Image (cartoon, rainbow, N blue to C red):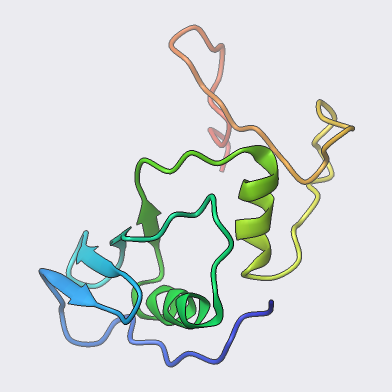
Length: 118
């Protein structure tokens, strides 16, 4: 399912607290950008009203945070496809069997952090 039309509100009046969409709630992370989504199980397929609300929330907030979601690789890719085609990164040499997944990981023992040069 492609992205539906949504009217962005990013940069409009500051927002705070909690906002209700028809299928979930969001809590602000900052007054102008970012919200935590509560009430969606991303491991399950989303229906049309949920997708509409999700696209509107993304347009409204620009950054959405989903905590405590347990997604396998296929569910993760299915969720990403709600926003369009998945990008296969040209430098993703480590996972030829599943090129749509790019693992970006840093631990305390890592010699560098992905994105240090960005």
